[in-house]
Image 1 (tube, helix red, strand yellow):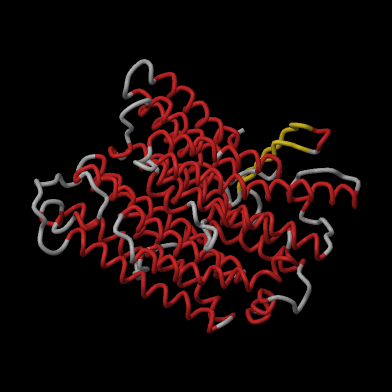
Image 2 (cartoon, helix red, strand yellow; image 1 turned 45 degrees about the vertical axis):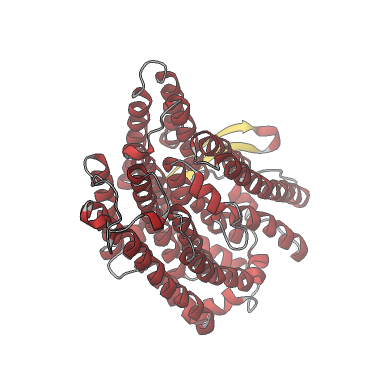
Length: 505
């Protein structure tokens, strides 16, 4: 019942917020914040009461939905899903708390779309029925389209259409692959079902497995923003309203990584093993490409967007290395990056609200009038470059350790990307806050809700860097179980991941 509540509370909160918008302009904000705060408390309760180190599901619930077709409402949370649900709800609360995210008009409908997008994202992290998973996966797209098109920047309609076309087209490949897997399993066993744990044991030919794996991979890679499938990402991240940017970069991109870990590799271990080297090369290339593109940006939000392409390259690399350390590094990287990129989008929105521009050339010397805002920018810029003591450093190191054990030459590429990250992070801080102040009115420093939100996020990123143990302990059993099930199903001696497995024994 508690798992259903985690999905239903944002749904009901969105409906109430839409209705409350007709009563008072501030009512939708209060209703949404209360609903997400309650949902976050429930998720924390699951974390506190569950035994993540047992390796079993922390919570599970199942109800029949369409029995004739083998479809059920099958929800479950393990350590991996729970951490991402916590990240989703936490960033949802932050996106509502921050003043810069408040829309000027149609507030009820804005909060309705925001809450339904959050609810669908939570469902993605809990669905163990592939039909239910796909339903939640698609439901994320519609409210996000309305958020971008309705409350985004100057080019919001173009960005929204681009986002929808890319993600919807790739989702069709996912649907075809799911339906094909359903019929292949049914034809070979006589049992037609969308249940994840049952489909794990489907016998697939090499050719069928390769095509189905590519269908899953394309959908997840587009949502993750993997180079070169990231064409929608810079426009959507830059033109979305603040709450939309936070959800897109901080959470929804992680649904793609989650899909690769939970579904793509375990369901198609043979095909994934053959594809692993190509995927790792794509991940390594994305690290360098995203960093170089960030260096060439003058729009602050587009700069942050391209840093996400670079950091998600680390995630893809770590997933397909498929080592125990690298997978835990991926989980920590997803959480750390989600918090870091959300905070940077908050800072970008605050600067745009104060100066009326996102053009970095229009900034300069802002430290004199906004030292607290500058201090937070330094903290999160250091997190972007992977400074020791901050969460992104731990995640990147864990990924690189296993990459080095697999291939020294492959590990050199992401190291070069981290060098470029130092350059674009320091360049961003220097251009905005250092140097000679440009002639403009005095801008207000962050205070109140802005100060509280950025302060909490800074504390979390330091906590992840200095004491990541609770997060690693929570994710380790589920990651180990998923990894081992895929390794056990792969043919011995084939594929780069098997070579890594032998090296680590």
